[in-house]
Length: 234
Image (cartoon, rainbow, N blue to C red; front, side, top):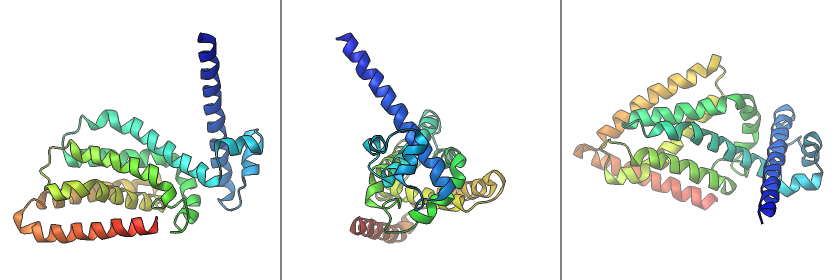
């Protein structure tokens, strides 16, 4: 019984190592040659595995990129979750999440620029808003749900319900800016984060003002339309 468990565990570890090797090899080739010019056969060759083995772990290049998205999300969570509970204010929590996201992505800055050429296409399965990206998108929004849920900020109930999605959209905009940021150590991106988080924090505070209720309702109606558009395109 124990021998069987050890064999199964060994196979699982080996399988994860092989999967990681294929993904890392793919990232190297994709960064070097671009998405369209890289084939699964070339990825398998670089990883030192058979083509069939590569397809066993990843059904396509799209699956490889989706796995990359998931890996980046997991690395981000590993950094941010232990620190998030220590930050009580919305501003501090949002700064932590977005700054940590950019820090975790930065080693892949050049690759992100290569990938953007394909992922920016609304019809591409690699687009962050595409149906194939839904699992990682959903998990990322969950992080912003946690960010909002445990903040001490006074947020109107209707806005609180939609705020995680809005903050997720905001952080996607920051990532887009980061992709195009050629400043040393992405200094412009970090300045943008600091300034926009400050602004968002003030706007969210103002949202609880009774005089802002009509504006808030119109803004939330627009969010609902954005969600419906996303569902229609899925």
